Length: 347
Image (cartoon, rainbow, N blue to C red; front, side, top):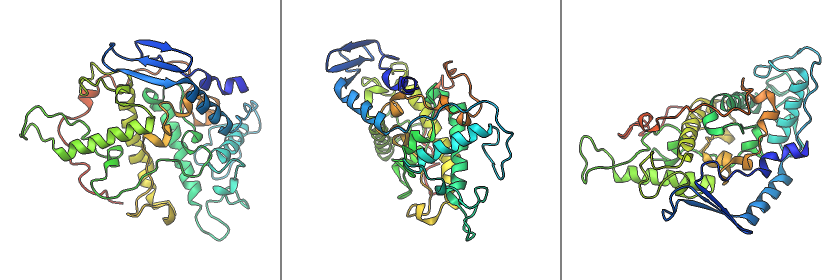
């Protein structure tokens, strides 16, 4: 089980989309483009090994597979996980308590311990963490089932983002209507390419929009712990034909995070306790660093999700590469600026 558990960590894949791979005692270099174009990614082997060892110490032990069969479900008020066995349900709940509510596990973080089926505490106050957890399970299932173009066969679990803490890293709130991180929510004007010196009816790009997309790209780069050439050819940043395959993966991730923020996270503003809301009353939202935590593959590609069927959302073919969904990203992204991010959304 221990060997299986760290198989994803041990197989740190650096050559999936590279042209050439060079390795020495202390350094590994993935060359993604022609020599002389600076299209390469450098890794210090000893730093990677130390980071992986530290991660192994943090990840909670994976529970053994649930025994098949078992009693028929007799749940009360189970709104999301009613399609799995009793044994798998209990296994999933125990794992979630560890993944989200601390290393020791804490069922009371989401439940009234006197009545696990209740949605309120004994004093009648709503258990908002339980309502949020239900929606997060649905979100996780959606990612694993429908966003293979980004998460591939690795998938995600609650631990991918939470890493043993109630609040993941990288959550963000509104600051003003020009919030750069709105690019992860509703601002689709991510493509700023000017072909004329001055503005025209066909060229509405502005310096401000250029600053926004530049800031967003830097944010994405920091979130994944990579440089610009991980997704772009520096001689022509706008060209998809000259970009590495990671750019399409990143584009799918951007579309995914917008859906997650729009359909799952932002609407929870009315559910959260006021202490969890931002200064402008909005719910916490995610960005690239929320899952990646500064690593180009979350948890260095540890495939936890395939061992927790409750989070699959219908996916079972973990060893089959997902079919391409974003084959024409240029056509899917409008050239002109959008007005979608020009004002604060109604809460």
